Image 1 (cartoon, rainbow, N blue to C red):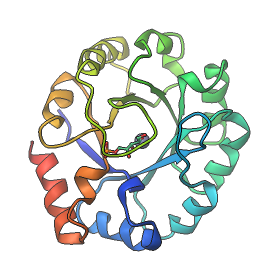
Image 2 (cartoon, helix red, strand yellow):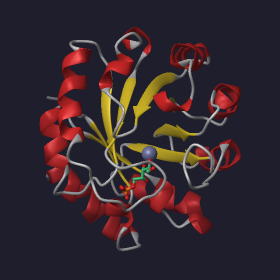
Image 3 (tube, helix red, strand yellow):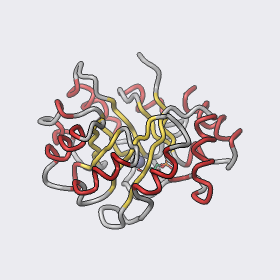
Image 4 (cartoon, rainbow, N blue to C red):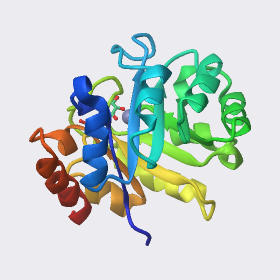
Length: 218
Ligand code: DX5
Ligand code: ZN
């Protein structure tokens, strides 16, 4: 099996020095940068938009993995593409036209992802598999960092893995990922792990390096 990709979520970073935090996690071993965009409507929290993403784009060449927790979605896709996102993930629950959103992302030349809340069944991806580059399975209810991992989703990881078959689609896990929970989802078939609080705890670069290494080792 190929190496697990670790994607720290900057949601737990110090926003007053976001660019420096991005550089610090890259030096500490991050593979992708996970960007949690929240609108205070689809989820009960507000974070940042394309302008902030654009402002940190120059700090690293790593993949910008953009998780849109916004509704509606489609009219903002071009702005996130222009901001420098490489992967754009929309929530299946965010609108009635998932197929259209995924086509729009690919038409912008970006990798298309779909995210499922913990209670959403995996069957919603069955008819869009050919339009997908990534499936992001939420292991917390989206909106906040630092929540407890929901173990029922481990079974969904296995089912999504079976649905995907031999297509080249990443399975990403987001929420409550720690050295304790990482092995559960990796064994079930996930190859990308998002971690916010578990990476940024300690508050400085040496701690980030240890935290990323601990998740990878697990
Ligand atoms: C939650 C976000 C996550 C969050 C993960 O809505 O999508 O990316 O930052 O944070 P932790 O790892 O602290 O659960
Ligand atoms: Zn996320």
